[in-house]
Length: 139
Image (cartoon, rainbow, N blue to C red; front, side, top):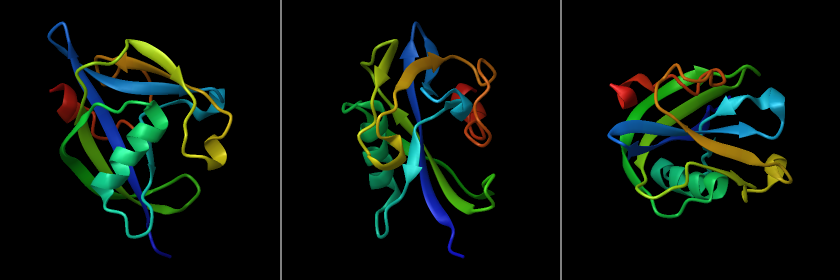
């Protein structure tokens, strides 16, 4: 079985001299706290996928993809193998928190994401796999 490509975005900002990372709480409580991410389309470059996913999931438009932080192979809870690409993204102008209805369609139709910022890797408990490369962001 071919691994499923996933593009993850650590959206960062500097506020009062401190690095912060964007996370969200799903309107479905069991989904936990996450970072924005999504599936890479067939024949789509991963950097284009992360840009598309950030726009669809956060509503942000004015951001810069800084660099690829990490790439790995990971076994999801359902047994599927994910080929994951984690990007560091910077934004200079974003609200402290907001609600957004993702525009990507599919299983995200009708749900709301509540976005907010964290200032350390241990501030909230992210769902499994989402915080795997947070340490380099905060250190």
